Length: 216
Ligand SMILES: C[S@@+](CC[C@H](N)C(=O)[O-])C[C@H]1O[C@@H](n2cnc3c(N)ncnc32)[C@H](O)[C@@H]1O
Image (cartoon, rainbow, N blue to C red; front, side):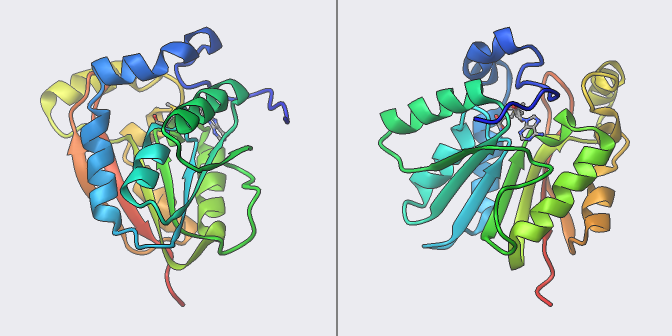
């Protein structure tokens, strides 16, 4: 498998990767956010779905279990976390096409997917790489296909403002807190770009966005 030297692992340090799933279960409302994503995605039978920055594959597996006839792909840059995802899929007896690679250079042909999901990926990417990833998502989506983004966003109440103020310099979160994700999605060519839900978390406001690749 290809080595990519510079990326931010799931919990910032490689030695924490094995604790990713327990941490998410204990401290993060991931099941509610994933349920909202799947409910609003309107995935149809036989469609093709890509989960970019799939991590331990929790969302990837949930989508496949909710829609067994879809062709489900999971991509991550980190070999170690992909091994956890593969093990979980084997245990759940789900057939998922895992791939190691970078979100900034997706190893798929143009117009391959009906849906692309990016859950908690964008705040791991620099501003330039966020924009590259979004252009890659647009490229691999079919016309009329949909991008579903879960990530940090502008704080939507006073408590979240305090947390965001502390978190803004962590990893690559600052652009998210400034509200630039929908701007980057629109600049990449998505239209419309809609915020579907906002969630309070211990790390700040998390938003779910839905962005469509125009049909024409
Ligand atoms: C916070 S985790 C999110 C995992 C999962 N999507 C979730 O919602 O739980 C971020 C993931 O992005 C991956 N990642 C970071 N940079 C990446 C890149 N350039 N291309 C693909 N994946 C990347 C990390 O390895 C990590 O698994």
